[in-house]
Amino acid sequence: MRRSSLLLAFLASLATTLAQGTLTASLDYGTFAGAYSLKYNISYYQKIPFGAPPTGQNRFRAPQPPLPITNGTYNSTQTFDYCPQRTVNGTEDCLYLGLYGRPWSTGQPLRPVVVVFFGGAFIEGGGSFSIPPAGYPVLNASSANDFIFVYPNYRVNAFGFLPGKQIAEDAASDLNPGLLDQQAALQWTHSYIAHFGGDRTNVSIWGQSAGAGSVVAQVIANGGRTEPKLFTKALASSPFWPKTYAYAAPQAQAIYDALAALANCTGPHSLRCLKRVDVQTLRTAALAISGSHTSNTSSYTWAPVLDGAFLQRPLSIATARGEVNIDAGWGMYNLHEGENFIPPGLQNATDTGSPPFNASLASFEGWLKGYLPGLSAQNLQRAQHLYPSLGSAENLPVYNTTYVRAGLIYRDTVLACPALWMARASHSTAYLGEYTIAPARHGSDTIWWNQVNAIQQSGPADGLNHTLYAGYTGAFASFFQTGDPNAHKLTAASVPGVPALNPTGEEFVIESTGFANVGVARLEARCAFWRSVGGEIPI
Ligand SMILES: *[C@@H]1O[C@H](CO)[C@@H](O)[C@H](O)[C@H]1NC(C)=O
Ligand SMILES: *[C@@H]1O[C@H](CO)[C@@H](O)[C@H](O)[C@H]1NC(C)=O
Ligand SMILES: *[C@@H]1O[C@H](CO)[C@@H](O)[C@H](O)[C@H]1NC(C)=O
Ligand SMILES: *[C@@H]1O[C@H](CO)[C@@H](O)[C@H](O)[C@H]1NC(C)=O
Ligand SMILES: *[C@@H]1O[C@H](CO)[C@@H](O)[C@H](O)[C@H]1NC(C)=O
Ligand SMILES: *[C@@H]1O[C@H](CO)[C@@H](O)[C@H](O)[C@H]1NC(C)=O
Ligand SMILES: *[C@@H]1O[C@H](CO)[C@@H](O)[C@H](O)[C@H]1NC(C)=O
Ligand SMILES: *[C@@H]1O[C@H](CO)[C@@H](O)[C@H](O)[C@H]1NC(C)=O
Ligand SMILES: *[C@@H]1O[C@H](CO)[C@@H](O)[C@H](O)[C@H]1NC(C)=O
Ligand SMILES: *[C@@H]1O[C@H](CO)[C@@H](O)[C@H](O)[C@H]1NC(C)=O
Ligand SMILES: *[C@@H]1O[C@H](CO)[C@@H](O)[C@H](O)[C@H]1NC(C)=O
Ligand SMILES: CC(=O)N[C@H]1CO[C@H](CO)[C@@H](O)[C@@H]1O
Image 1 (cartoon, rainbow, N blue to C red):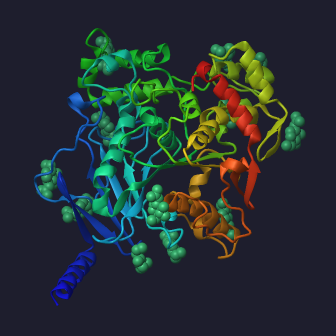
Image 2: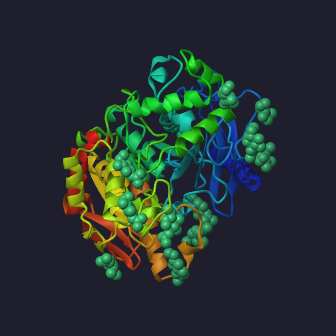
Image 3: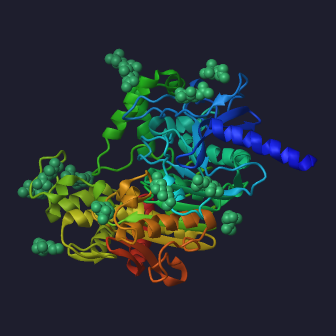
């Protein structure tokens, strides 16, 4: 009697809550009000602080614990601003995250969790979502899916990645604060996600582009021994992993010095000055420095640096040594995505760009030397041999232009090999995949899973697009839900699924006509070469 009346009271209050569309979560530093969307059948909290504002002395510093909220319930049904960056002013007080999942109430089983890092070359982007949220096509691919997505912000450009010896020497500053923001969001998830129905022992991380570069960074963080374990599975969609210098290497120190000069903060107290300078001055200076680096000299602008603690070794070495924080890893890349990052003039008969490039062999060789200035003449020759002027690659029967050739070199060094290395280093299971649907450029793949898009539901229910959405996006969802991309396979048994890299030596290929499993022995050989010269790049 007593139990059933309690249950009735509980159901009544739940019904009221759902009818009003509000939900609350009480954490030890504040109470947060989220909401329920009947249209998308999700509960969501769009804005929760996970760190103190990184302003004043906290600029360039690892995130500090969030401030207690003492003036009532915090409105978590509002979006949050970008951190300061290229296209928008943003605001320095930007350490917030949002989360959503299927409705859940206390007492129901805890669900798997996916923490997603945004992309934007480590210079721009943001984690705030509106409704329907980013990633919804993944959750909604099947009713078997029941996991929580967490979308944190992290600092970018000078605010998130200022290198230099001055930073290392200062007790109130830290190298790679943008990566430490991500780690703090993972620690927040570990501490609090159970209040939202999430299982902290069942966490995946995911991202695209620099978001996937962030995944790679978290995977090799702390020598691969992060304690407590913050996640066990990782999916990296086109991991952007540019050259990684030691924090005080000349190339890295030059960036600190350039910022100090542009902000009029040179001299022995430059860091004290940089901490006080107006946010717009820093933003403008950070932007000028980004623009000063071309593909010819170096693709490095604001990016992770080796700091001796969080990032101890270059990716090519850490992964070779198996120093990773994951049991299951899945790397994805796109066939032509390297072409997004190389000089467009490489496809022209003549070019008027600055510096000029054209389709000639001499121009290609000039680009290669400028892109990889540390590579010895002998290794430049070996690279040209591995990528001949008339050649082919997995899923590319033939190429004969310097543009595609240069694009493949860039793709392998910055995107595909990092994807392969991360996956291969996983403690238990590894998957690799290639997206080849034209134009297969950087970001072409996101159409199937990032935002709700007509293409995901277009054509007849048994048609190609439904198959592509079910087979591709559904495999991501299955990986997040179970750790295995095939456990909840949504396509017919005759349709190829995602092969385990071990022992098949094959990757999952998304094609314009469906799916295939293709051997990657040649990619492995090319990446083995890049790994062998990793110190000269450096990667
Ligand atoms: C909403 O999601 C819950 C949890 O997965 C499920 O039980 C319920 O059937 C869904 N409701 C609708 C209307 O789809
Ligand atoms: C609490 O204080 C903050 C900062 O002044 C304010 O933005 C917010 O609206 C306040 N919340 C409530 C519930 O009064
Ligand atoms: C929370 O903020 C949103 C966006 O500004 C607003 O629409 C909503 O009314 C606010 N909720 C409460 C309870 O104040
Ligand atoms: C950005 O900040 C600058 C300087 O404070 C201001 O002039 C400008 O209007 C701001 N732009 C936007 C879009 O808010
Ligand atoms: C979510 O999935 C359901 C069931 O397949 C489908 O009817 C609905 O259109 C999907 N919603 C969106 C926004 O794609
Ligand atoms: C730096 O100093 C120079 C010379 O005094 C001045 O022209 C410039 O505006 C200053 N720049 C900033 C960002 O304060
Ligand atoms: C030549 O290269 C420039 C960029 O350097 C580009 O804007 C232009 O469209 C190219 N022309 C052709 C015909 O590809
Ligand atoms: C193409 O680039 C090469 C190397 O920079 C240069 O020597 C050559 O003159 C260029 N050709 C044309 C047609 O612009
Ligand atoms: C390059 O290959 C394309 C087909 O892929 C062909 O049409 C073209 O003639 C070839 N060009 C050269 C210079 O071999
Ligand atoms: C399938 O998706 C593609 C985009 O990849 C789109 O161009 C095409 O129109 C869609 N097909 C149908 C039948 O809707
Ligand atoms: C995560 O949860 C799913 C669903 O309950 C389960 O199938 C899977 O084995 C769990 N994975 C781990 C690593 O606990
Ligand atoms: C077109 C161009 O400027 N190419 C240069 C790229 O960088 C290398 C190495 O510094 C130079 O040799 C090329 O001339």
